[in-house]
Length: 146
Image (spheres, rainbow, N blue to C red):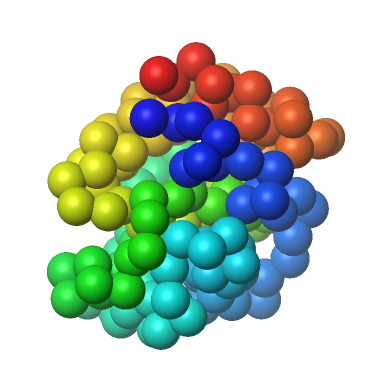
């Protein structure tokens, strides 16, 4: 499920900076748009989702994704990863260092989400993601998530 069609070097942004969570979500969304996974309006649906329910899941990780209505804006399943070494305030005293944008086509959404959750629930993996010096290094952490 974490094959190169869903996650690859083109959908990873290292050493990014965002002034707030909206900027971080837009960065993750833009990678999904540029990768051909979603229509541009999907980004607004990601921000809409964030307003109703935070996508911060703990361990310095947020997983923004679109609302239920946004499913029609997904062209194919894809994941984007934004590495924010300085972190970005996600509210309630939470800081995200890794923002993972998700666009799951059909029923793939939950499968992708559960595989990501398994990886980022391990603090060592999150530390490796935050400290990854190359896209290859970062992607290697996800390669075991078949």
